[in-house]
Image (cartoon, rainbow, N blue to C red; front, side, top):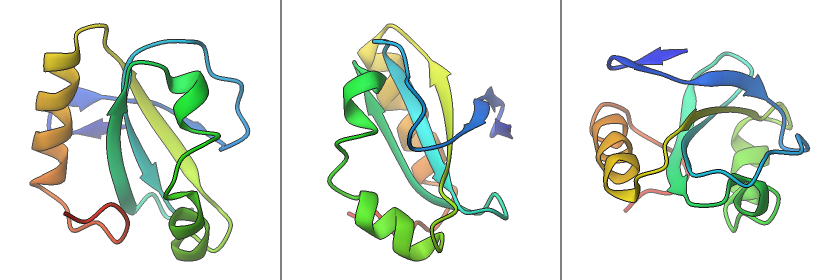
Length: 95
């Protein structure tokens, strides 16, 4: 999936056994409508234990899809997250 010039791999399910990698991730419903965005230095731990997973499931009616862009540098992950966040209205993770 390409979002504002950034390629994200996926879709993956919430139960995917991700590697211990840094990534920016976009959460969508089954129609690929973005509902959340975030970044982490460990995708393997972050997705299964995410504090907004209830919001994801409620808004995606149980059909949560995860797209991830692997990126080792936190500064770059944060920049990508900001770009994506500024271009969509998210129902989960609203600041």
